[in-house]
Image 1 (cartoon, rainbow, N blue to C red):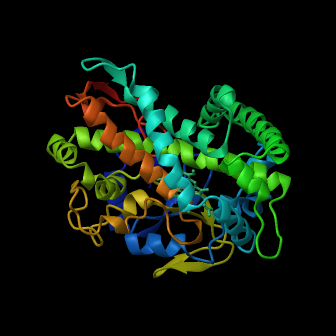
Image 2 (spheres, rainbow, N blue to C red):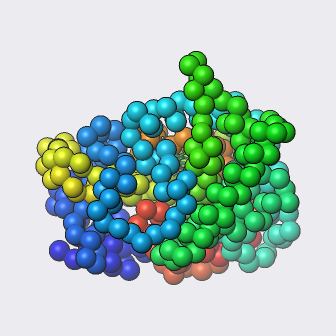
Length: 394
Ligand code: HEM
């Protein structure tokens, strides 16, 4: 079997590939492409849910890559983050960060998210043609996370540039350089907040302690703040683009939301299910022989769990390829993952998508696609399903 990941058609529309894999077996061996060997790919819903929470699968890539030198020069704060650590390290980091990154903090941030989104669209006029990715979906999430962390206004462009560089899929030199620039910047900012605390998240992370007095180390602080930027940027950008595209392709459903914005929060769940931004979850592997559902996974196999495929599994969601904003069980989607690594930023991401879906039709009731959907360029990333550009007529 040829690797689906080497086929450009996969990146344009991956759902037929996922359906074919699932039909073969919901947990199956697939070539990764090039000389990289096979990976276990999980496309069934029940199996994906089990794999995302499986204690037998490790997220610690350093052990896997120990005898496969990568030649990379990524900053150590990015090479090892909470997202690629296992218990007990993960448990400790997650406990500390959830003490500081609370639902109340997200709630307080909502007016700022709206103000940032308004600022971005203020220069637009009905009738204009704009690229919604460049004008809104890309800058908004990084502005929001900068605000959340307490990055001063004057540094936001810099942070945005580095965090865009970190997304330069395939350009290792650029990514590695940006990782150092961003990590060094965050280390300096954390030192400044230690001297002169404010009420933003980075100061809270500097100060956080658990009952036993345990605290985040300097490297952990930097690692967490960069992880928040990276994990919350690309994903939310893709989510905004995919959600707006899905609604523009279903104008009758967009009209329903415009008439009754109270329905937007539940609609966001269905939009995340329908075209999931994290299409294949982050790196996992099997340190020893194990099973997912009934399938054997050999020791040493990388495991690619696909929320994008699981969310279109007909065994879980009726008529899964249909967008149905009234779907009663859309909330069961796995777009934010499952288990101990479930997305830490889910409430913030949801708030951002909701705010955009309310603002756009309010300001631009005639919003429509400026080019046929089949011609839109998709990013060439296995992990993230997101648009490169979304030209719209306002
Ligand atoms: C719609 C936007 C988003 C989507 C679809 C998304 C999706 C995900 C998924 C699927 C995971 C689990 C990955 C895995 O197990 O392999 C995850 C983890 C994570 N996400 Fe998000 N995310 C989004 C936005 C955000 C935002 C805005 C932030 C931060 C402000 C964030 C922070 C994180 C962090 C820190 C983790 C790691 C949690 C851990 O290892 O315990 N995400 N996200």
